[in-house]
Length: 169
Image 1 (cartoon, one colour):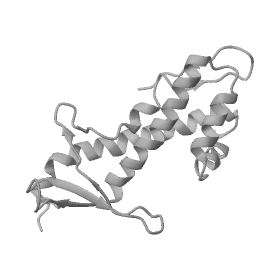
Image 2 (cartoon, rainbow, N blue to C red; image 1 turned 90 degrees about the vertical axis):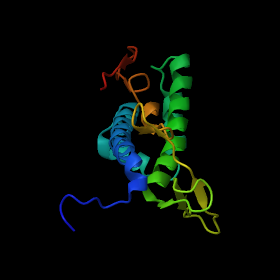
Image 3 (cartoon, rainbow, N blue to C red; image 1 turned 180 degrees about the vertical axis):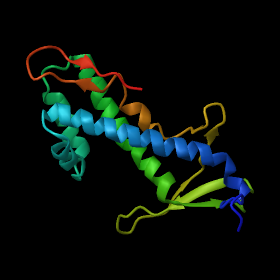
Image 4 (cartoon, rainbow, N blue to C red; image 1 turned 135 degrees about the vertical axis):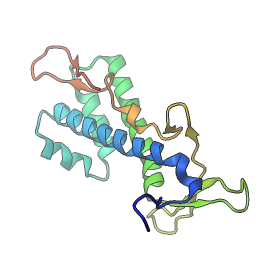
């Protein structure tokens, strides 16, 4: 194989850029979530990482948000929704990253699809038809990167002052 040869079939070319964007943006969202949890806990990143590794991380983060007195009610509900949305979307993102990609030969011939098995006992296969938004070069789903962003990421002061937004790119 020469250096200029592609390693994937042409049917997948449309997905190369969106999947690359997905990887980078979701890594940024994960880093933002880590910083957010560290701020909520008023601890360092290793302590926040321990929370994120727990099986019930989503529930724990939502409890931290609900207990934080420096967050206004409307922001609190937005943050809870953002955390729920983040975890929901990351499940789909993980499906895109770890499931088998194949080209359909039965329906929508020539269209890429995904198929995978959740790691739960006696699980059934999960099928998906990824759709690419050619205007933004992103997969139309998931949107895990939108869940933790400038609106939801806050610097929480140790004193009774109000929360201030953290600039994000």
